[in-house]
Image 1 (cartoon, helix red, strand yellow):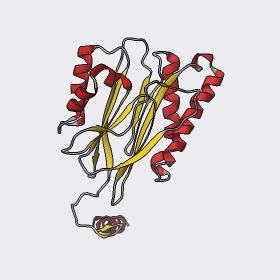
Image 2 (cartoon, one colour; image 1 turned 120 degrees about the vertical axis):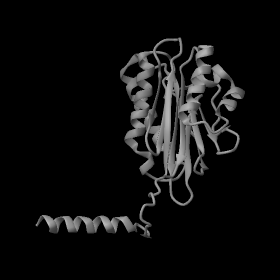
Image 3 (cartoon, helix red, strand yellow; image 1 turned 135 degrees about the vertical axis):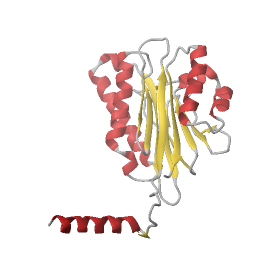
Length: 247
């Protein structure tokens, strides 16, 4: 009996070794798995409790800014991200506009909490999220509201913002009209999400210089942290750096 079971298992593994979902698969060749390899962190500002938060998943990255450096601000950011995660945007529709629904859900979650907690009624902040769509023509869809930013760093090219920061923080009491869009990506391309505290502290020119090059996500984040430490920003400075890979 034991020999019979082992024979079946070996036969199954042999089939799995050569049969992909689209036919024959050469033995030893890794299966293609488009995903985002990311690292992130928050350099805490000097104005009180950190109010930024972020989440990293294989095909989803999101950052939220609760606005003021307070317990209520941090709670607002956490609620916004929880709503995004619960909506599973990386497993839903693939239209750019579909991400608007997830931003609106995050907005409703924060507004609902604000209706029960007076400390949250005057908050202002932002939300940025990206979703990786795989397939034969991979792309990143993005949604943005507030004064943070999403940057695209094409491999071998010049980093540039994908989004336009608001000149004033978004109030959670306001109606939302997120900026949504998409950009085609190739292996080795990088996307960077950052709160307004980063650009305020370092400036657009220096941020562009620090994002240029082929350093690993960890090394790039370390360079940003070193410069943030030198200027000691008042606002929280959150950065998430994600590389698109296929193996």
